[in-house]
Amino acid sequence: MNCAIDNGMANTKHKEECERVFKNYDMTCPRCIELANGSPAREGWQRRYYEDKAREEKRFAHALATHDCVKSNCGSVCTAFDW
Image (cartoon, rainbow, N blue to C red; front, side, top):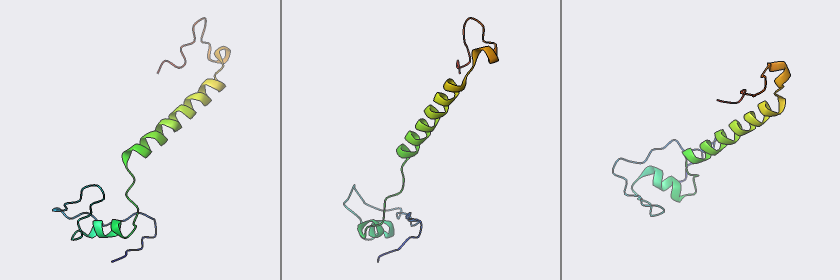
């Protein structure tokens, strides 16, 4: 059973009684069969976390680079980035 997926992500779920442990696939489970045939694993939380973190750091660096204390009337102590 080789399932071709257009978007690179499989929509098949593991069966409730799946006995998969790391790469020891349960060959009675439809999702394990897809994985054994080379289907990519689903994206985990970690990749999204680091992408969001990098996006936030880039946004903050841009805000810092474009901040003008005179225009913002910060005074003697700039509190623009005390978020």
